[in-house]
View 1 (cartoon, rainbow, N blue to C red):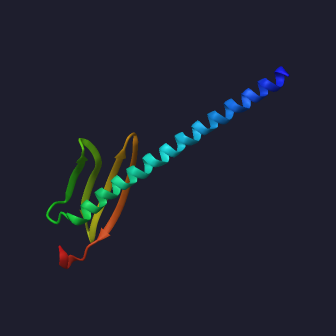
View 2: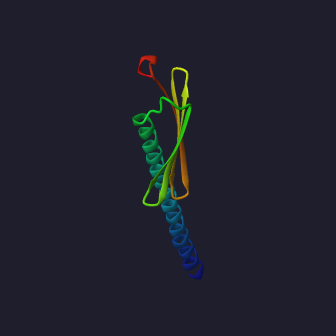
View 3: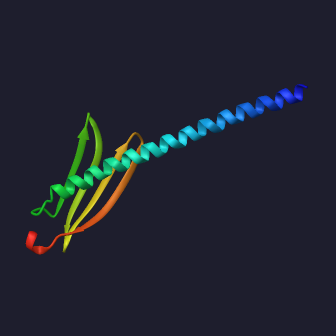
Length: 106
């Protein structure tokens, strides 16, 4: 009888422990998702504010006294290279993209 109670307690404890691990992984997924959204804010900012005169532009976007993303824009032959790092809690996501721009628009 004691063995059965002991096994039952172990099963209850391990099921609660596995549920706490599942909630931790979902919070990590949420952190990465929000970091990705913040990195996309940087990409959109870079496309809206194309720096034609400078070879490189660096910008940090800050909201509510927190750094949301860090942007690097480099002029290259035929277009621009955008590197945007989004931050959320302890997660960081980096997006690197290239956008071609015809010479007549430069």
